View 1 (tube, helix red, strand yellow):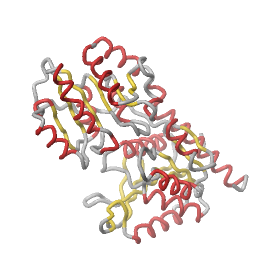
View 2 (cartoon, rainbow, N blue to C red; view 1 turned 30 degrees about the horizontal axis):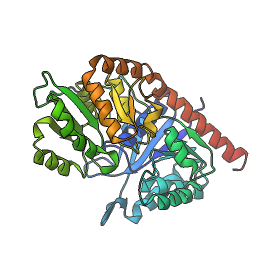
View 3 (cartoon, one colour; view 1 turned 90 degrees about the horizontal axis):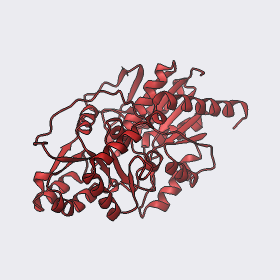
Length: 376
């Protein structure tokens, strides 16, 4: 494996918590372990150092305040600083993360202009939205600047092929099953309870509202259910109010934003992991549940289909009615839950970060070769 000077770039990075944030750092850390010189360029946050080293990775934070009224974007000077960092960085390859990251897209465009080999990792699906045609158009425009695309699942690969004719490489995200878990007791009596956990940003796209929607029917038959909703987001307060109005507060626990170690600790105490997101690009939380020996129920025709085989090592539902039906089966069958969890866990080697690092390094080498030797 040739050693490279690599920079990974995105808005979505620590201290924010999420699938892209975790995956981007895990890749950077593993690349560094394998001898690459790795930097991360990301946005700054109050109280967070602008320069630091974390797990062998140099982290550079761009100075810049959020644009008034559009917090996703930074003020223009931040993007000028990004251009300067790329120009002076002597990087052999740039790996942007997230088609929805303004810093990532700016780095994609700047790298093209500076003639630095550049790859973008697509972590998302356009999904079921009225803005779909517009988002595909933007994707086509931005991906003209990329030398190649890494898609984190089969579903994302298919989505990406609708945006570009550039080379697309399917490389899954991963999980480290040895990651530390901080086990914090739940603030309720777990004796005799069946705990159904969901880890997701509390947004409509993640489908978390559907857990609250189906809960009354389920609780009518299974009084011992506890729904643990792990994560933060704009829907959280509304869902808490809905649960309270329905008189279900005793069967729901909303954790809010918690560090990843506590997420893993909560999952270790769960009986079932349920995620009703129809537009899940991959599902790092799925892998985290599997790594903690928790059986998985998710939606079909998404990135989760690369991880779960329906009826073999978990359940994949085609609609919400089927989702509820599968959840009932899992609630009633602890032996099946154990079987699914064990079979899914046996496949975790497919999502090992060393393996992912090797695959990603090969893409870097191909892109660099094509750029410099084939005048691509």
